[in-house]
Image 1: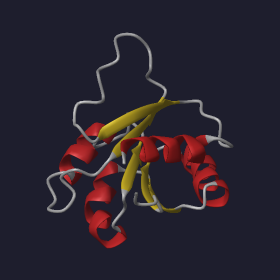
Image 2: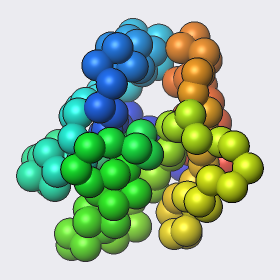
Image 3: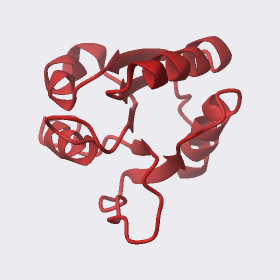
Image 4: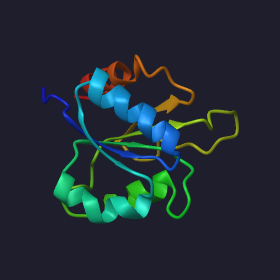
Length: 127
């Protein structure tokens, strides 16, 4: 089983970026790249080479699912695993898990002390 070490995090809310960054780096020990726009991920993904994308759903410009769909057009990233982090877990929300590598949805608000473990658990269960 491959150990998860590198995560690309897409989120437009700067407070959530900070909280998630601390949760993933300080508590989880992950190497992360955080971007506040889906468009930025398209130019950064190959240099950073993440193993997993953690993405907000609603963002200005490309939404999380749209950004992931565009990333999956890049050779070598067609099947990059994705976990969505969203407040939109109400009934009637569109089904986000449309690709075989859309692995999970984690709701906001989330517990920063357990977020890294939740992501690691999803990673280990899918490996």
